[in-house]
Length: 245
Length: 217
Image (tube, rainbow over all chains, first blue to last red; front, top):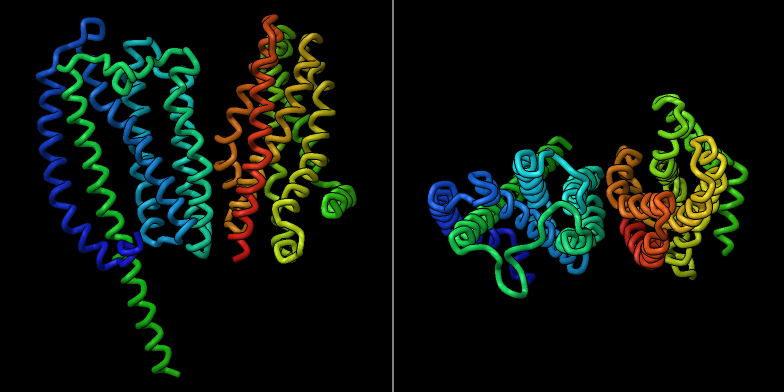
């Protein structure tokens, strides 16, 4: 755990991960988009509209996954004061917020022709909207303090508090029987979706996950480098001040 | 306990926060008939939602001051080093907050319900829902207030953080009253409200204690 708290070691690891994750991402996007948009069959009820699902569902999974990752990192911040964990949670927040926006936007585009409305106050939709607010609240809180350390801790606590929303989102379709359809992939009795549609979905999910990994690694790295630049500048200013004094 | 009395005495002597919250609540409710038109039927159907939303916004108004003055004049640091457990003192402060803001809101609610033409049979449930909901509002709000102690523009920030967390309270309070209006039993919704309160009591107290300790570090 603490082995990875060393910035230079982290950057080394990040540099080795990056090309692999990037390569897998590009391949998975190429195959996944081909299968999803061209190869997979149109649904007998939804016709071509079903293809929105290949973006919507992975984005929704990643919105939840990213928040879970952020909450776990935040726990590591509070328990071990792990510096990289704070950076990774901070870097993950805007990415997760973007996934949530993509999920809501594609869902809305699909909802108009299918449900006849852009938006309904269904339990699943509402809880995902709350997730977006939690992401935005985290970003607002982490930037709201003059001392960055205090902002990091406060935001980490908020991330943990907000984690109560995750099971609510997951089970909202079972607890409240409203408009959004229940789970069809992660079920005890196996996925209720045809393999022709399941495979493109899984490949797209892998592509999304690799996208998270590459952007996350890049963002953390740039944060580390920015901190280093700041340190160098500060010590330069310090030297100049000493020279004058 | 002594802290609770102190906070109450402070609130009574300054008497600004409670009065502010209450007048906001009343004014907000008075605005709705003016904006929506005075049709009693429309008002009655909207009343549960309007009352709950206005109460919730009024409760948010007072949150900024919950820990700020104690943080600024250093009392919070004295509380943290005092032999009494900080969590108990935080709970005392939250209780004082509820007595000074939640309680006036509850007391004003029946009068405002008449203004909005809410049917009388829903009044008892409305009061019960308010009694169960307002403590949760104070507790959840305390988390937001403690996280933003010392932040820039903490007032706006508190609203951004706390409003999403208030949504479950709002949903169950409104559905309890709506259930009565549709002649269903409001019991499941009220029980869920109670469950939120019981869960928030330890969780929010502990969370805001941790947040305050970090603010003081």
